[in-house]
Length: 169
Image (tube, rainbow, N blue to C red; front, side, top):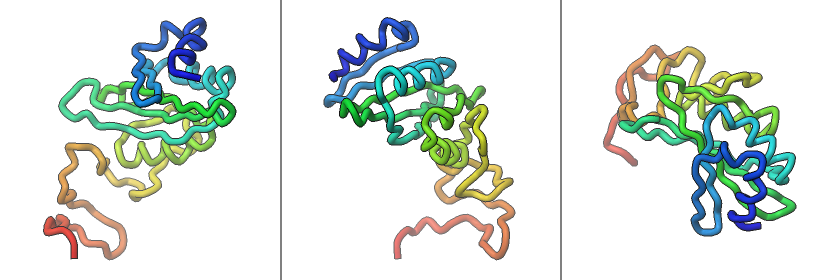
């Protein structure tokens, strides 16, 4: 199934929800509004057989608005087709609905995005940090986070000064 065939099969039900379509190197990307995510995700899983959520990632477009993007990489095992869904998220809202009940593999992907970028996932069953400790006030993968880090109260015996910038051994 090509991107054009995908677009045709989606158009009758979700055509107005697709803001743009990009076809590049035999991969199709649909841009959608955050409020349409769950409906589009269920349609992709149930009607188009996108049964495998490969990844959920985020992009920080620091200096642009909307600042963030959340990107869903889908794959259909039966059709051997890849589909990418992108949605723009403003810094003010900084939240989208979870798809962890649609694809359970989204659970930890969404938690990592929350932990590293600060994008919240509404109705997530267990949205807590998985890499940084509870109460850590920063989001280290945002582009405005300084490379040398930020001093903060750290648990146990870890250092609290800025990290050295010399690099490697």
